[in-house]
View 1: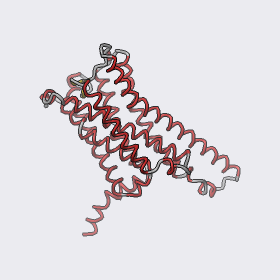
View 2: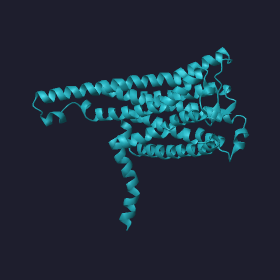
View 3: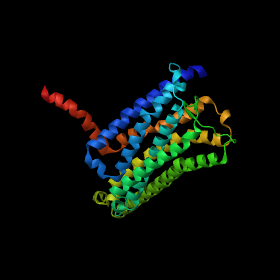
View 4: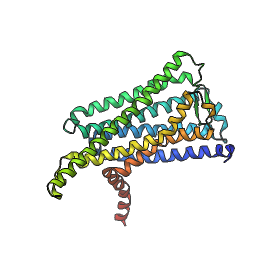
Length: 318
């Protein structure tokens, strides 16, 4: 495909991401807001923070990127001198909140599986709200700290441009490394650790169930009378594993792009790969909500009830 032809497709791809983002995240937020029993789970509080941050990104930074990249609105690039900074602040802030919220979704599930009796004591509702407030505040601070370094657009990725050349001052390099460590490396490391712990715990529990079940002659009632860890908690833990695995897979191209930048090979990376790497990561903004709706049975059931309700009302009037 010719590069010029692909430039015309870029805003279409971004618009598709925005539509999926807004639709799926609004559904999840509506379901969580309508049914209080969902909010009794600490994991749901962080999932709500995750969907809110993804929705905010889809309503702010992404539309700006679509307008900047579109040939029909080239004047947007020069419309406001500080528009790249707005794009950067919104993108960094909401992506920071999204990544750290997903991190805490995984950590919550890890605590629920490894310490089921102390789960509610360790992660109280007030403590969860405090963590969520801290996530959003830290994201705002980091985004604001990076904004002075943003001056131009990077049309390869349809977003604000940030130079990673060796001529940057030492304090700027230190700031960038710190923000990368806190905003990306730290939460991803925690996600990997938590998912590994969940996987090992679930695997070990299944082996214990199989061993004990076989030792008592394969009695079916034993499986239904096992502790809560082996039923709903394990199913929920597997669902979180799938969400985190999808997130990590979608992050791989962007990680390769960042490595190329750090090694000073950015100019050797094809423009198509740059765009694909960045916007594959942004697909997490709706994939998280999609998997949440599909994998969690109770959430899926409530979402179906929510959309069936108006039709039931119409049928009853007939």
